[in-house]
Length: 126
Image (tube, rainbow, N blue to C red):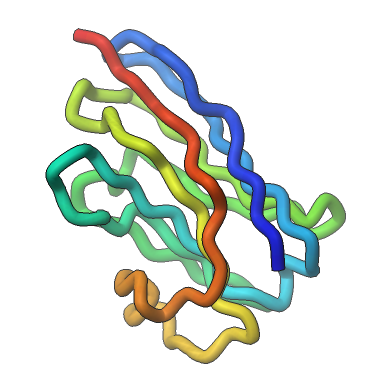
């Protein structure tokens, strides 16, 4: 599975961005997640969507502001980010648990994922 993340950029605090993660396979059959990382910090879970019927899970820091979704026809997963804050500044990575083995709550752990995209930089200015 190959993953290509895109959509990052520079935005002012309070603004919004939508990240995309295009997959080479059928995203409907994978658990998919978004993580982020800043220099000197550990990788942080952001959001996940379960395969098949879905089910989503969010980090508390983004709950109510970010939304993960999936377009099965395009084999693409999105992360809609609203009300962005300077502390959201990071490189964002998408990842796939393929074939899916993890339950939804376990998808906060990066070790559950088998494939990773290259990352896209999001910078939020104050």
